[in-house]
Image 1: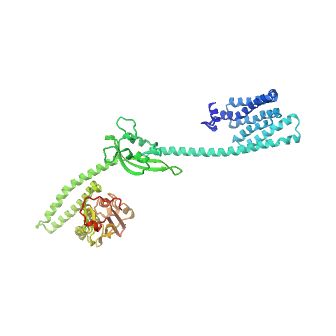
Image 2: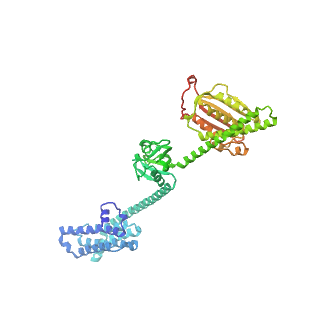
Image 3: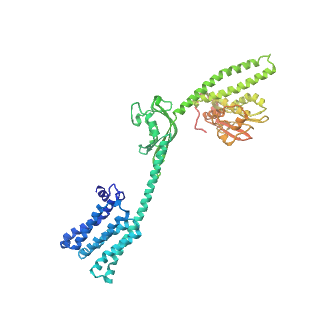
Amino acid sequence: MERLIDVLLLGRYGFHELSLRRRVILSQLPLNLTMVLTVVLFGVSNPAELVDPVFVQGQAVVLVLLGLCVAVPWDRLPYPSFLAIPLLDFIPVALLRDSSSAVLAGAGLLAVFPVMWLAGSGYRPKLTVPAAGIGALLVVWVPLLASGSATPQALAAPLIYPFVMLAIGVATSVMTASSQAQQARTEELLERSETRYRLLETIVDTVDVGVVVIGADGHDMLMNARQRHLHRAALPSGVEDAPEAELLVYREGSEVPAPLEERPAARAVAGEEFAHTVYRLGNGGAARAVSVSARQFRDAAGRRAGTVLAFADITDVLAAVRAKDSFLAAMSHEFRTPLTSIIGYTELLDAEPALTPAGRGDLHVIARNAGHLKKMVDDILAAATTGAAGALAWTRVDLAEILREAAATALPEADHAGIRLAVQAGARLPALADLTGLRRVLDNLVSNAIKYSPDGTEVTLAAAREGEWAVVTVEDQGMGMSPDDVKRAFTRFHRSDDAKRSGTPGTGLGLALAYEVAVQHGGRLDCASELGKGSTFTLRIPALGEAAEGLNAGPFQPDHGRK
């Protein structure tokens, strides 16, 4: 009963949410209430009508039908069985119309209730709508037939009434069909939406990345299991939950908790987008290092609806990187000590006048291979200890002179390999740079050009100014690289298949380190290559203007945004 009243008052529940029995009762109630109203009207205007046998029979029938609506378990019967009630409703309507036509001229209009019930049931409208029209017709014809006054004129006179009822039935049926189609579509869309939501929840809980969705109002809309685990790492010891301001969230390398406005959630709520920002959650052995990215999302109207934050746990990755760097640094230092001794003693032996030509040749082989090994160890050590640009020793240099020095250093290697070196670096090319880093870059580029060039070819070294850039190019006529290898040329430890097959020694670190040095200088290192035709490497770093050349050297930080 409570639900019936709620539906009547347009409360929380909808008509379709009721059980079949309750829907039947609710559909019958309008006729019963109207019949009660007729009793009140007759009681006021014509009390004698209340004792009319036909009127009493009509009231009794409608009460019996309401009792059937309540008593019969319609849910257990075949679905269309309840339509017997609106069909039987035409009986009390006919009785009321026959008994009160002189007092209540519109009594026959009560047939609209069973007509709308039948047509609005949605069950086989091609049968129920005509049945409703026939029922309305019988309401006016049966009394005439029963009284013996069914003349053609008497039967034709009230035909407008059943036709109006039939039109109401058709309109009700059309609206019901449309409503059912819309409801079916809505239910289908809701089912799809629910399925997609559950799929999204499953995916979000499956991925090994913490995901939290923050609405535009700053409240969490979604948090997956992985993020809940990471959130617990940021809680102070012994605390089950804490507000954002009390969480242990640190910026990378800091031991002081990050200010609230610098934390990922606060930055996201403020509308900021960022990527791969490293934070530490918690302290001690349970602390986790996370890489956080944030992206805004918008609703269907294009308004900002919130932010999606992704927390990738990189604790193990950072530990592995530190372990790798520590291992490489330790091993490189261990290698350098014996190599320094080997190279030193070969130099001493080379100065010995009693050494035979054959022995001196063998000694040069030892020195050359020791030099190659030392260069590889230096590359590995540099890879393990590469720091920020601020750690470089900035000074004014002449890039053209450094290129000439690199060519002079590589000349013996080039002569031994039968390679011609052509240097085009006449004018001065001033720049602010780390001298050691630049020498390593140019030595690596020139050495690579010689190593991967065939006998009898030429390597061209050029230095020139291009606008605001100091530019150095190293061009060879060697084996070249495929487009895929060009894309990965500056990736650490990458070596092309052709380079591996050639047997030329290398670590795959030289170009990667050269690229990092170029970036630290606020410049870049580019590669253009074609298989079988050679490669050209171009180094660009900011050049010094003539006005700046006369200034005293001082601390300098490159502009990393300059490309």
